[in-house]
View 1 (tube, rainbow, N blue to C red):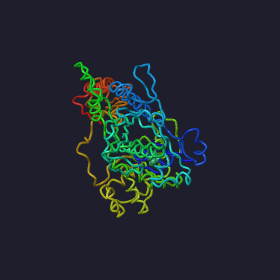
View 2 (cartoon, helix red, strand yellow):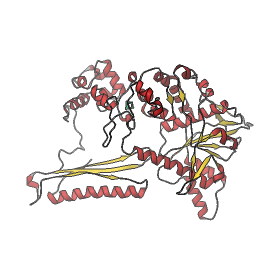
View 3 (cartoon, helix red, strand yellow):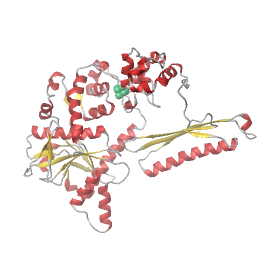
View 4 (cartoon, rainbow, N blue to C red):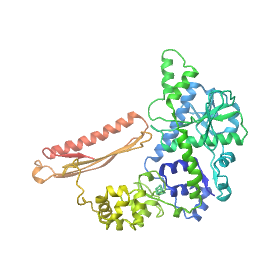
Length: 493
Ligand code: SF4
């Protein structure tokens, strides 16, 4: 019985992978294990380094932002079920929206309240039949915050199908606004789609439950951030420094500066397409029949099966090993999904077949990426087969790549581009010079083994400390090279 969660939707919008959506619709939990086994689905592999740290950091961030609200607006304006934390502050647990909404008054925030996806939303989108035809059910939803606005503040309201209509000036209903907290410097498409989904389903839930005194506004928002304090906290601190307390209105203004409002008119149609087309395709197919392609969008997918250092979960049905077994064209760097389709139309369906296709082949003219890379794409496929790197003829080389360097230093930075959180730095080096360049009594070659500098706490000071350690390691390799040879050349990559 497929089960649709908010996370499955955002994972799909991030990867645009139908196969991943299908696998996510049958969760890898005890309750669904028998079903997964009967469908021969592979297990999730969750060993990507740093993923756990990022998840934990996201949870801490949510708690921190809610406490920003509590410390500025006051605990009486934050409604829900909370408990004191031993470290100070409070943590809100899940509370039924049906109970908390009874106390919702303008100026308050409903925190971590949960509601179900119901018939009004499904009927509005014309997808009510999924429950009977495909036995689909929906995970309950729990936005971090529902802001209760002043009566008369809403100019427009969201309908359950995602359309937006004007609100009459004399409307006496209480407007509700979705706010979701995300540890991210810039909200991405999946995050903005999530708050859109919350708004549409909340509008449906209000109708399902007969809460006629409320409406949902389209200005749903993500409350993003990375290391810096929120505008809300900065305002509060600045006011208190001069012995004043900010007014409720000033606090609302500062909160507004922190929020990233979703362009609702863009995301509601995207969600409609998801529910009315892509979800139906996936529900009516088996996972092995659905399109897949290993590329950069697979990063973070639990079905990739990449042999990360330290990973133990390996399954031949995962996409990475499957691509190897099938000699899948997605193994060739920069061959996109569209380019692979164009090659398949020309009966080129494997890396080996591509390796044997001359750059003059008309098959390359059928896709713009292939046309632009026709002189290198077959060479990349050949290198995969032979495991030997070479420069294909007539491709030229890069002027920034030196012909030779005595010391080669490789530096890595493992970080999350969305949140700006760095997980670790790494460095290793390789030194080799001709014997006639070696100083007396010195070795002509030396390896500098890989060293990892993990950032074990989410703080700029710790990040700075590890960055300086990395730079020190690079400096020491260069010093060593200078001791061994005169004027050694170096490249850091
Ligand atoms: S690894 Fe990539 S291709 Fe495979 S299911 Fe995940 S997103 Fe899709």
